[in-house]
Image 1 (spheres, rainbow, N blue to C red):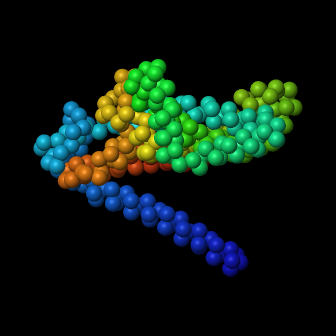
Image 2: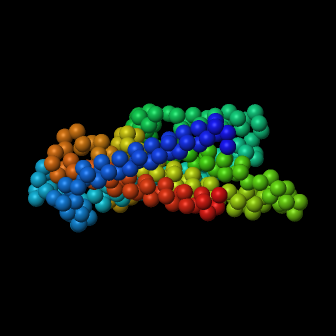
Image 3: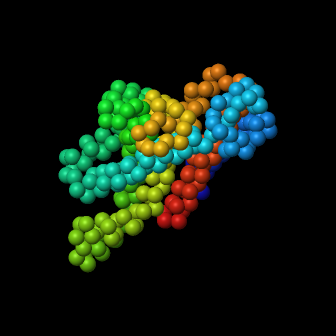
Length: 284
């Protein structure tokens, strides 16, 4: 092996080790800061308490996180359900249906969506989307608004991963399908999508992790009421919004409970990333 290749290899190894060390440090920091919550409050109270009304002392507060876990999963899951077919259809359109003069600008537009700051999405949702939903079904700031905003935010992730997975399908597979007389629809459903399902599934899982970790846009449109919603038109509060709203004045057990909230969110996202990596290894 040449010296330049050796230097590059060890540089990449060092960068990978540094990234892993940073993640481990974040996990350790959250674990240490939330230790008081586990010891002073008790893990069972994050599930059994009647509501979320934290106070400086564990004896006088209630710390139920389930409504915010439900709000996070419902908002992210609903966004994934909407963004997955839209992203997949967008990728198929760009790759196999759109003329080159349209496919390039359309792909650039999708990529532009990924670069828009989340606060801009939240501001648009607050002044346009929330009033529209409110005119239809008050109050407007709701789970539905959060789902729609998150759909726009994760659409580029789903689309670009799907596009990359479709490009990775060997051309020989397409030629074989065409030789069998399959129509374009038959090629897509019988050859392309089965071969690309691993990459598509990875993109969907990572998009859900992105949606679960979003803070500002969801905080601006979701209503921030701590409850398990009975319908998509009711307001919710997510784990990230809870941390952003209360960390500035939290003390004692309240502060430890918010760090525990961050630890729960980190574990959820880590589980999604691990599952995505396993799917990629299995179907890659």
